[in-house]
Length: 125
Image (cartoon, rainbow, N blue to C red; front, side, top):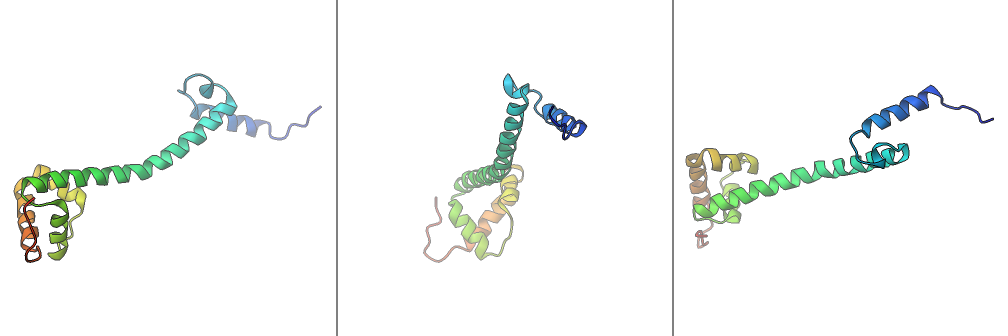
C-alpha cells in the first residue's frame, strides 16, 4: 500500500488551484494538471502584459502629442527638443492630457518650444 505523504495539505493546495482555474472552458477548467498549466501560462501573460501596457500608453501619448504639435506647425521631435532647451520638465502623459483638456496652455508651451529652436532650423511641419 502506498504511503500518504501530504493528505489534507495537498488537498487544500489542489482546491486553491482549482478555484483559480474556474471560468476556463473545457479541460483547463476541470482537469487539475491542465488547470495548473493554464494558471502558469496566465501568469506569464499577465507579467508580459504589465510591461507592454507601459509601452503602449507611452506610444499613445506620443501619437497624441504628434497630432497636437502638427496642428500647431511644429514636428514632435522639434517640440521635444525645444522643451529640453527651455528646461521644461513635463512628462508626455501630462502634455498629452493638456493638449486635449487645456489647448490654450498647450499652445503656450508650443510657443516656448518654438522660441528655443536652433537658428536656421525649419519649424514648420
